[in-house]
Length: 127
Image (cartoon, rainbow, N blue to C red; front, top):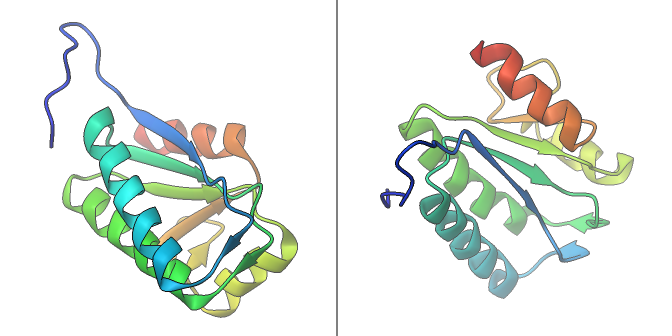
């Protein structure tokens, strides 16, 4: 992980918002993976909140970059929380058992309704 230039600060979490409306196809999947991992490395954060507010469609290739990010965060003892999903998008993640709304199941991703709820969840469990 890249060293931050801060002497008296530590980045606890970063909030990233996906700007695409549809996550489908290998080109978007690979670029999203690169963007997510680069943002994590540059921030020095241990935790990521990923906002899906603009997303109205996901295909299975969208899982690859998210699983890569999850794996990297898990290696450093961090968490990934997805939020802002429409019912349609959330259903895809629920049917594939990739999300947990309670944080207690073996699902790789936690799901919260919005960014404030996701941040609250992060700091509730770490306190």
